[in-house]
Image: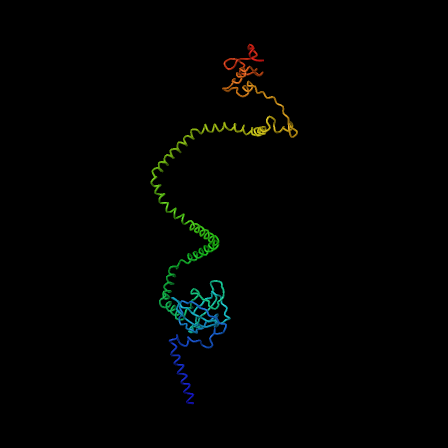
Amino acid sequence: MTRRRFQRIATNLILVMIVAAMPGCGWRGLNSLPLPGTQGTGSDSFLIQAQLPDVNNIEPNSRVRVSDVTVGHVTKIERQGWHALLSMRLNGDVNLPANATAKIGTTSLLGSLHIELAPPTNEPPQGRLRDGSLIPLQQGGSYPSTEQTLAALSMVLNGGGLGQVQDITEAFSTALRGREQDVRSLIAQLSEFTGHLNDQTDDIIAATESLNSLVGKFAVQQPVLDRALATVPDALAVLNSERDNLVQAADELGKFSALAVDTVDQTKENLVKELRQVGPVLESLANAGPSLTRALSLLLTFPFPNETFQNFQRGDYANLTAIVDLTLSRIDQGIFTGTRFECELTELELQWGRTIGQFPSPCMAGGPNGPGNPLAIPYRWDQGP
C-alpha cells in the first residue's frame, strides 16, 4: 500500500510539473484543451472561421449552436486587426449556406454564452459552409447581452425622458383642448391625402425613374456641361461688350418694322387689286391645263398627234416622202425674216444668178432691202437660165 501510494504521488507530481511547464508552450488553462463530450470532434467534422467585432466572454470550448442545437465548439480565439477571429469545429452533418451569420447569444437571461450560426435573413442563401470557410465581419455580430439590456432600461427609466412623459401628455392635452373637431378633420384630410398619394404610387415611381434617367444623361454629358459652364461667362462678357450695338440694332429693327408696316398699309389696296387681276389669269391657265397636257403628247410624234398616230402607221415601220426646199431665198424667208440678216441670202442667190422661189418675199418688193420683184424687172442675159 505504501508503494502504490508513493507511485500515485509521483504520478501526480509529474502531471503537475507537466502542467506547470505548459505555459511556455501556449498553455491557456483547461479551456485550451479539448474536453470530452463536446460536439464537432468526430472524424467527419470540419473547421470554419468567423470574424466578430468582439467576443465578450466567449472562451475556447464554448458551444456552437444552430437553431438551439449544439453542433460544434470553439477551438481558438485570435485577434485579427481590430476584430476577433474565431475558429470553430462543426459536425459533418451541419448544412448551412456559405453566407451564414455568426452571432454571440445566450441560452437564457443569466445563461452561458455561445456562438449562434444561422442562414442569412436579408439575402438569399448562397453556397455551403465547408472546411476552411470564412464568415466575414459583416456577417458577424451579437445579440444584446443582459448587461446591455439592463443598462438601456436604466437609461430609459432614469435619464431617458420617461419622467417627462406626463408633462408632454399634459402639454398635448392643453394644445388640443377645444380643437377636437379640427384635429378630427385634419386626420380625415390626412387619410384622404394618403389614399390619393397611394393611388399615385406608380406615377411617382415612373417620375422618379424618369428623373433618374435624366440625371444619368446629365452625368454622361458632364464634360460637355462643364465646358459649357466654363464658356458661358466669356459669352456673357462678349454680349455685355456688344450691348450698345445690340440696343442700336433693336432700335433700327423697330424703325424698319414701322416702315414695313407703313409700306404695306400704302400698297395694300394696289396689292389686293393686283391679286384680284391675277385671279382670272390663273383661272384661265388652270382651265387650259388639259389642253396643255394634250399638247405635250404631240412633241414626240410631231406633226402627227399621239392619239391618232396609229391611224397613220399600222405596222412596225412607215415610209415618208418629203421635198425639202433648201434654196437660199427659202431659208432666208423661213428663218431670217424679221432679223438683221433678212434678205442677205436672197441677195447672194441673185448674185449667183439663181431664180428665187415662187412665193412672195419681202426682198421682192424692191427698195433698200431688196432688188425688187424679178418677174417685174427687166431680164438680164447674164442672169442665167
